[in-house]
Amino acid sequence: MSSAKKEIAIFYGSTTCYTEMASEKIQTELESIASQQGIEANISMFDIKEHALEKSTQYDLVLYGISTWDFGELQEDWESTWDDIKALDLAGKTVALFGLGDQLGYADWFQDALGMLHDELIVLGCDVIGYWPNQGYEFTASKALTEDGEFFVGLSLDDENQYDQSDERVKQWCAQIFEEWTTA
Image (cartoon, rainbow, N blue to C red; front, side, top):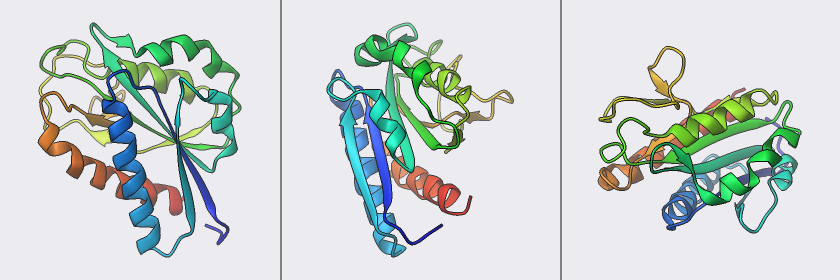
């Protein structure tokens, strides 16, 4: 990885502020990791309600945060910009995903929006990093699982039922994606 300043962006949609708060935690953790490793990085956050997804193509590493609503539905800001995803030029870009969901209240649809976002992005030629083990969760079904079912396609947070585990998961995932990104 070259010594030039790294530009990292977090794009998220948030109705109840939980995805925004997770984005802030991820931003803080990535800043800490970059500082510890002596890497100069600028890490910006963008609410997709106020910033076009097209802006995400300008960054070296892009993180997209989405929450699943009710019975496997998209968060409202993502829903209103969904058609914009297909037009993104992400070929060769490095992308990581994170999602929020309720594994007990909506066990049949846990993290479905995360899986749907992954499916839209992966066909654009980007390099998706940050797949996350599915151990430690209680759910019935999810569109966010890899083909073998062992991983989520991104960090999976459940601030409804496992809030006490979110900080540690964020910390581990940020270290994982930074490692995957900087050694690629």
